[in-house]
Image 1 (cartoon, rainbow, N blue to C red):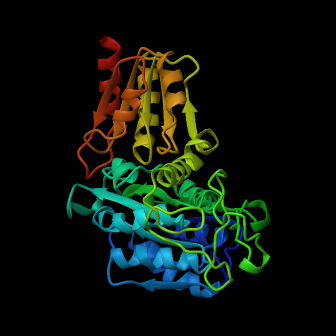
Image 2: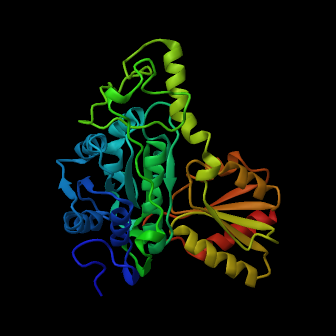
Image 3: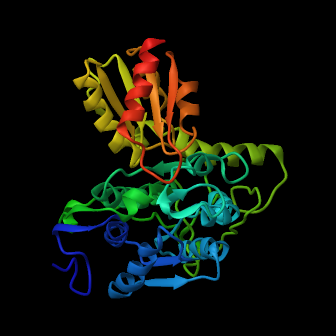
Length: 387
């Protein structure tokens, strides 16, 4: 059964790949420009976008590399389009400088990272979760990041739409931190009718002729600012340098303070409405697992296995690793005797978990390249209970 008839996705239930579901979600969110460079295990996203975007009046363009891809997103965003790209580890690294540009220029865009195994080229066809800290700290300067971590094909679809909504609302780059398992697995996908899907559209700045000339174009006392779109007569300077309320570069300390507090505050001030998480068997839990992405599937199996052994275990699944839901983790840590952080890496999200916990925290870490086995998580739960 076809997901579309040469246009918008048809509502219904499908059996499909996670990477394909991502593209259908992007289309329903209003994305009409994909700029990218193919890289395993995200290449199916580019491949499908190349077919599907033209069918809905959009474009999918191949750039010379990931640096150019990210630059194209910034330009496309200021031309008025909802924009996206997809990549994996090495490409994510190459995008970082222009990701910083997008943060400073407040260019909404969505970047999907289908994570793979290991540093450098690693194992391109196998799973890893080694880019989680890079999503938060990869670009330079003081930044606040929004990132989503899907654990299923359905969630890859849903969170792609949510990523676009957050990008448009907060005028910022947003990451969808998928992984090879979620991207390449085939599962059921339910596409609801378009009228049931919330879509946030961009707030656009009025042409200069309609603006109060005495009023600042960028009122940094507000978290959410209208966006100047090229060709619409806004007559505003858009710059990568620290800039004032008219968009002009400045080295004044007060200007820097106002701008940077705005860039960070628009996310920090609303982090509780951004946070998403899922709880399983936590009501009576004495030990809990914190996990995300495909690793959370193993973690849920481990919780069930632990309970069969008489261990009162539960799971906290991080759907938004960034901004980190510190209050949620701290509250849980006061209820249980220990936390286990299950990841397909040697310890990344364990750091903010440990920083915000009031109980012992141990890692259940698995070499990138294979999905973590539930037994390893059960072993870690038994070890933290014994401490």
